[in-house]
Length: 225
Picture 1 (cartoon, rainbow, N blue to C red):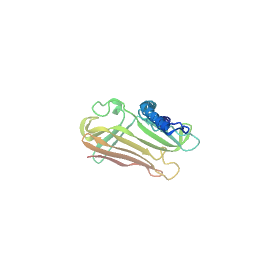
Picture 2 (tube, rainbow, N blue to C red; picture 1 turned 135 degrees about the horizontal axis):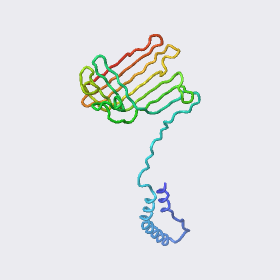
Picture 3 (cartoon, rainbow, N blue to C red; picture 1 turned 90 degrees about the vertical axis):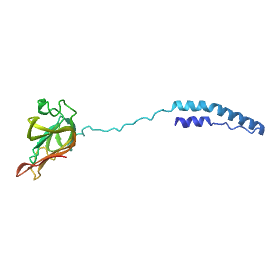
Picture 4 (cartoon, one colour; picture 1 turned 180 degrees about the vertical axis):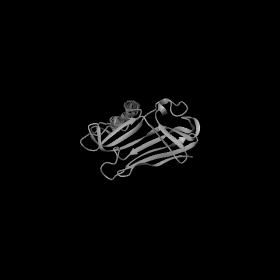
């Protein structure tokens, strides 16, 4: 906008009254010479008023918890993370963690210091800060994944360390408080994947509780390629 205003100012010409033709040619020649002489100064003045670099505008996201008006409420936060499960078919045990395993008692595998926590989101009905009856939970983030073989002796909690490294972990629970009064089943799952050294890992663990049949682990698999 400033550049446009400067250009317009440099082009303003007074409209003269009628003069002899020779005088008009002389006057136009003088004005042209003046415009050519003043043009560099006008360009400099305009360029000094323009920003030399574009302004970076970052997107703004609102991750605050939504207002509690008796409606479904969303809570977002982060937490330290440790989850371990074993595949009964091959004896491999996976641990996804953001803190040292065993409270830091094992120096030969796993993290040796606390890392960034895993983000989680709870969705449900609350009274103040207290969750009520129905609540869904979702968690996801980076985690240090440790795979050990429970069928082979070694230095990782008495087992052989197979692979470890950074990967992704996630968790979801369709009803934190259980099955409730209805016939719905309460299911929660843990999943993980990542490249651990030369091996590709993916694994999951799932448990289901039924209103009339109790609870059972329906899946626990660890795959390394």
